[in-house]
Amino acid sequence: MKSHDASYKAIFSHPEIVQQLLQSFVKQDWVNELDFSTLEKTNNSYVTEDCRERFDDLIWKVRWHEQDLYVYLLLEFQSEPDYFMPVRIMTYIGLLYQDLISSQNLKTHDKLPPVMPIVLHRGQHAWKYPQAIQELIAQPHEVLAQYCPSLSFFLIDECQYENETLMQIDNAVATLFQLEKNDDIFTKAKQVARLFLLVKHTPELERIFRHWVEYNLSMRLKEPNAFKAAKNLEEMAIMLEECVDSWVDYWEGKGEEKGLQKGLQKGLLEGEALVLRRQLRKRFGELPDWAQAKLANASTDELESWAEAILDAKTLQAAFLLNEDLL
Image (cartoon, rainbow, N blue to C red):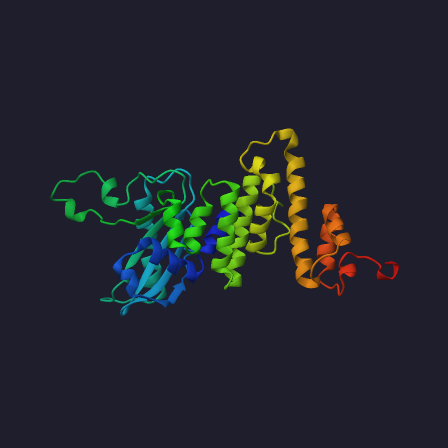
């Protein structure tokens, strides 16, 4: 599994995000009856007959009235949707039931819990394939109709949501969907800043989002280390806003290949200096002219050295690795 897919899955491995997904994008009456305090991620490392583990699915358990409800969430990463998705869902639910029978030692007359299958599709084009197994089976003779399986899944199709709708929802999941769209760099800066405000209350969640956002934005810039100096989503947003003049051509794919590395390097230096300047101000207050000049003319190696030195430095001069006796 690709690293960005793994980080995307990590986002939906957090209960707060699953709750937001159900409340904001499923929006059915029964969702309001769920006890989200009982939301629990369960084991889903089932192995199919060909011995290939599935890494694109998540299973959550939550109390619904007096029974458990299993929410089967499948994250569809493929650019081209799977025409036979209902068959995959039916197979996966069958494996889930087999596991529950075995692990919970279900006996004759015991009932299996209900399962809510959800497919989260991330493609750029709308889903146009069947959502029910019945649509994939040839029309049987009426005598056989009763023996045909009946199963459908709930589809959340990201590309179907307009930015205006997502902005009105205004939670971390909606902002994530916005970030997946092909917006300009100015819009991305605002979206990253908003995401930080929405998740900063949970450091672990902020860290997960930061890894995913960092990868995706760096990929758009074709520079894997674009946000190396940023310690959180807020600093990433600041770098986007302040370095937009250096990065915008390369974000939109306008920069000539010959000048691409030079332009990105300039943007990286500006971004690293910006983050370090902010950290120094927080620690030592407004910076004197000599410190501003050093930051403005620093190399990448110097910025990295100063970023490490600030962790233990007790004075501004020490942060710049200066001998205070010579000042």
